Image 1 (tube, rainbow, N blue to C red):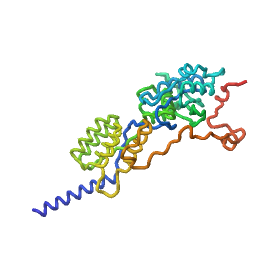
Image 2 (image 1 turned 90 degrees about the vertical axis):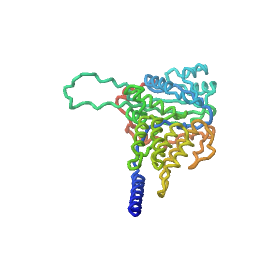
Image 3 (image 1 turned 45 degrees about the horizontal axis):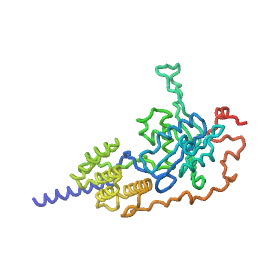
Image 4 (image 1 turned 90 degrees about the horizontal axis):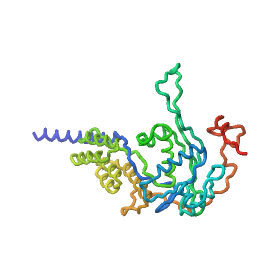
Length: 378
């Protein structure tokens, strides 16, 4: 009797070990959306004051983008304040647009200095493919086989960030966005705006604000997807809530699964990610310690790296001090203040784009329509 019981216990332990080993080696995962803070590309500690200059380029498209920039301004962050062109003109008492309807950089710089701004965010619309007319309903075509390809709205804007105190251009970047990319990077826009160029402009404005202001942007969190451990069905149910963005319900499911089955490492790993969604990074580290198994190697190291990266971005965005326990992994890179940026040297001919050196070769994006409709400057 004792031998049979011992044999059953040995077989049960071997099955459990194989199940844990199989689940550990299989590596089933799935992703869920989460919003976390991401630091700006221009570092400045404390309160940031940004002057949004008039946008150049096509006047109609520039005005639409200017309105969306005001709409998408990062309001939840108390460390960011912005003045838009009308407010900047009123504060500085200077007209920011010249006679040819183009932004005046010197006037914008003087107005920003009078208003006590830190940075100037100035953009220029390089190209756009917007204002797509909606399709006519119930219109039958004679040749339905040769349907035209659906147009993809797009826009390309070049942004320059200027430090107000020194007057130096400390960063320039081109933001290129189309409708497919906007829907992929910002899925929440599908519920806020209509399809078409509205989503393109909203996504472009978000990308543009990230140059000078910390933003609460969506990221993908990698969840463990167990199959052969006890409580796996409840963990997968919590994963379904997390994919819907309901992290509170997902945390409740994972917490119950971890309480009933403490050996379920997937429940503890996902619980650590739920703590990140609440911006409680110390709780995330404590929960992740329960996910370590007796197998060789640290299977939680990728998750720990991801958690610390989000924590570093969080501290940089909100100007928080370094945690008392310090950083487990590499420290965040040292940021360079705007006054430490050396002035850019004059541009050499060798640094010019390649198409300028080849005669009769049009640059990328060149079309006859744009060439014929370009404004004539006398």
